[in-house]
Image (tube, rainbow, N blue to C red; front, top):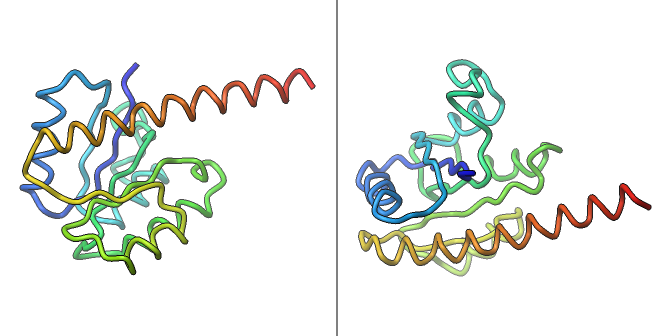
Length: 152
């Protein structure tokens, strides 16, 4: 079963690089690209054009540009973390340059990770493969924990 990756990115070249990397690899990811944070919230909320969950399924992970033209991505992350259904949603920032201040703020607000933008598809794939392995482990642990609570 494919994981759903929601990518909030206003740079068309970065979106193309990620799409090409996913097409070149055999990663179990379906990519949905939106242009900015306001659309991310609408997508997650199922509002407007995003109301059809068959066409716009809920994501397993969000990757967000840290420097969008609209809606501060920290506000999007904060909104996500305040929604009960999305508290455990993996949220990754995709940044042109990672500063310690950006990283600190992202982690404080609940981001799972940050990675640097690159046009090198191999680096993007290596990063995503590592993250998929992390997500698989976390998912298995969450399923085990739910089973333990159900049997308690």
